[in-house]
Length: 130
Image 1 (cartoon, rainbow, N blue to C red):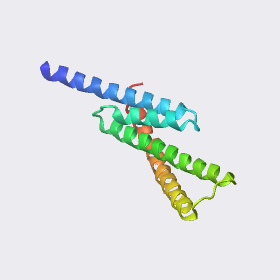
Image 2 (cartoon, helix red, strand yellow):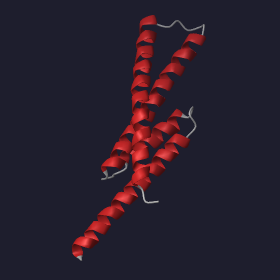
Image 3 (spheres, rainbow, N blue to C red):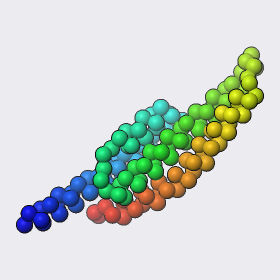
């Protein structure tokens, strides 16, 4: 009987993990694309979730890190764009190139993580009770 209760509690915890992570991912994905601060905050909230389910951990980490990298890449790109459009400011070409390269690297990393996020989220949904 005790073993059965422990099994039920573990299953209940796993279900709660999955539900919390899915809700966090949904909030993150629903946030306005250009509101980088909100997206970064939601991504960090998601990363801070304490979960034990391997599927929930994978989805949490992939999705949160993808959106953090995407927001940072977009912030860098927009900053470069604004700097270049300000004709009164003399920009350092080496610094611009370095920031552009960093933005591109973050974007490439985000793209890979977004695919992992999609698959991992699907795995969590598939394991959730209907």
